[in-house]
Image (cartoon, rainbow, N blue to C red):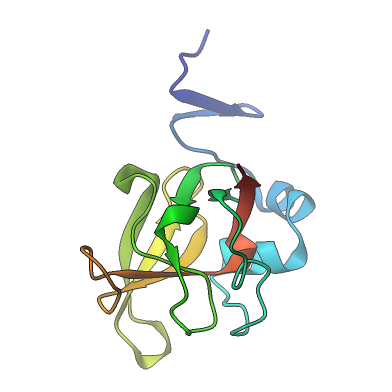
Amino acid sequence: MPDTKTKTTDDQTTDNKVIKSEEQWRSELSPMQYAVLREKATERPFSGEYEHDDRAGTYVCAGCGNVLFESDAKFDSGCGWPSFTAPAADSHVDEERDVSHGMIRTEVLCSKCSGHLGHVFPDGPGPTGLRYCINSASLKLEPK
């Protein structure tokens, strides 16, 4: 029997990872969620569901339910996407260098399903000085 750190999807088992076929992802996600999470697309600014949402709660990955951000870390950056000063837990997000579109940025990914969330920039407020700029389509708010 698998331990609690193991996720089984169909016949694939990996430690702490969710692995699905592209067909499974397409059937479970909306077209926008699929484009963002699996194809690294970006929502149009000021168009996302959570950009101006001030409800208290926990933001989880829309693809796998991994806890990503808490509403306490959310702030209005004016950039057009939900912005956070820090993830709920550092181990819940992965960061990779992104050199697409003629820019050098740091991409933020879900650590469980490798879904694209957005980017992190060093221009945020408070003690972290970071701005996690995240697509609403990659998130699901679980209100408190």
